[in-house]
Structures are given as C-alpha cells and as structure tokens.
Length: 404
Image 1 (spheres, rainbow, N blue to C red):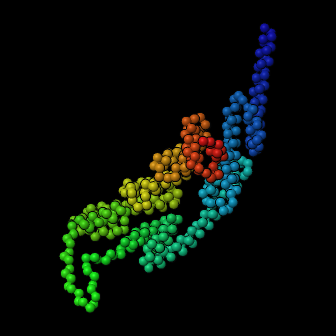
Image 2 (cartoon, rainbow, N blue to C red):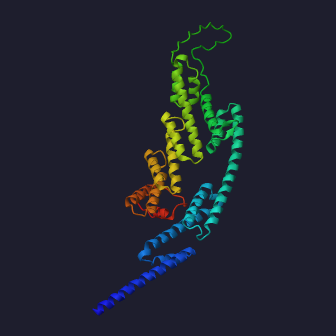
Image 3 (cartoon, rainbow, N blue to C red):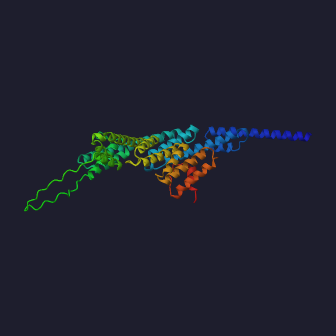
C-alpha cells in the first residue's frame, strides 16, 4: 500500500514538473517573440504542450506568415528598375501591410519598408503619367492635323493609341475613346465612298462623230422602307456611324422604329465607353457590368462586348487573387474559364493558384479543394505557362513540383 502511494506521489510531482516546465518554455517563447527573436521563439513554442499548446502553435503560424509576407515583399522590392512597375509595388505594399497586421514592430522594419514602397509607387506613377501625357499630347496634335485633312485612317490610328492608355483624354474638346470610334467609322465610310462608273451610260464617241442623244432612264421607284432597311443593314454589320446617319434620314412612317435603333446605338456606345473607363481605373467588376449591358443590347456589336466582359472577369479574378480574396477570385475565374474567350493557360493558373491559396488559409483541410487546385495548375503547366515570381513561395513550389 505504501509502495502504491509512493508511486502515485512520484507520478504527481513528475506531471506537475512537466506542466511547470511547459509554462516556462511558453513564457520564454513569448519573450523571444516580443524581442523579435523568431528562431528562438519557434524552438521554444515547439516544445510546449498542455494548456498552452494551441496558443503556441498560433504563435508559430503568425511567425511563419509574417516572414512569408516580408520575404515576398522583399523579392518585389529587389527587382531591377527596368522590371519595376506600379502594380508590382502595390503587391509589395499589400504584403507589408499583411506583415504589419501580424506584428507592427516585427523584424526588418516593416513600417519603414512600407513607407519606402509607397514612395516608390508614387514616383513611378508620376513618371509614367508624365510620359503618357507627353505621348498623348503629341499623338493628339498629329491626329487632329490628319483628321483636318480628311485622313481618317491615320487619325484613327493615332487617337486610338491614346484611347488605349487613357480613354477619357481630352483631344481638341472630345474624349479620345469617342474620337477613336468616330474616325474609325469615318475611315470605313471614306474607303467605301468612291463611286463606281455608271455602266448604263454609253461611253462618249470620238469628237469627230456627233454623239447621239441619250434618253435618260426613268427613275426607279424606291420602296417605302428602303431607307430603314439600309439603316438596319448598316446596324447589323456594326457600321454604327453610317446606321446613325441613315436612321436620322428616314421618312416619318419609319421614324418610330428608327428612334428605337438610335436609342440602342447610343446606349450601347455609352456602356462600352463607360466600361473602358472603369477598366482603365481598375474597377473591373463595374467594367464587367457595363460590358454585360452592352452585350445585352447587341452581343456581336463593335468592340466584342462578350470578349470584353470575359476579359474584365479575368482582370477582376486576378486582382482579387492578389488582394487575398480567394473566394471571389475563384468565382470570377471559373466564370471566365466557362466562356473560353480568354487564354486558357493564364485562366487555369490563376484559378488553381486561388484555389490553393484558399486551401492554405483555411487550414489545409479541404482535400477536394486542393485536388481542384492541382488539376487547374496542371492544365496551365501542360500548356507551358510560366508564372511571374511575385507569388507565394508555397504556390510557386507546388506549381514547380507538378509533373505530368
């Protein structure tokens, strides 16, 4: 009996000693964490068990997430000047903010690095804006001169180049995107406006022989709706400039129908123009809705609204992926993949990366999500897609390790 009591007493003190030792290790780990001695903190936390075990594991996760964010941001900041741009720096800023949200006073001066990244981004944006403005001014001047001389094709090429960069740029009192559309249409009309010789009239005989009198052919009767039919044909062929001109000239009996078409053309062009401006401003979801509106009016209209919708969906998905909103990114990229209107390898890579990112941040428990991610990444790799290096090392490693 005494032996049993002695054994129980020894066991009690052993357990108490282990618990006390675990408490000491946990406190030492916290102290090392607060002093930014991360390797020592991780070593201590890994030995903790008992009541503090879950908290110790959370400390380890926070340290790993912090170091990953700082490492990714540093890889972006270390790029050579010719490889640096505002988008890359925006991603670095996001990673620094992520690290700061974990530990504002963490190692490697995250606050100072964040300020440096923001300053670099502002400087690059100003430099790019100045260069873009100079280019736009030069192209605008040349475009106006070409248009004044009725060289619409040359004018359209110049002003459309400006519109691609800045749709709302004011050139001679008009927006670049509108000038681009108008002069593109004028170039088409100008090209087809050359009259063909009238073969119904005989060639004039030599002057030595008097020309016989020519009896003019009686005018051919025009049907009542011929003007409306021509306007509809121009509309169907996406020649909106000609269609607008013809619809405005129809007779009174066709005016109601013509006005409906004119309203469609106006609404379509406004939706497409608005979508372009929203996309240039990085508001991809709003741009997608604008292009959807245009596609509802005329799915095969000028500018390919269905393709533009899909492209905005792709941009939205990629933007949300880099913002860490993996659920929304997956939704947009899945829709984009269904349409098949964008580059499949690019779509599948970012879809797989978004699925894998969600798998990691949700605790790596949903194996079906992981399998979907690997399937999409595999499709991208089989197509030879090469991702940029400004991605999570975990995602890049998973992609690089794929074999097929």
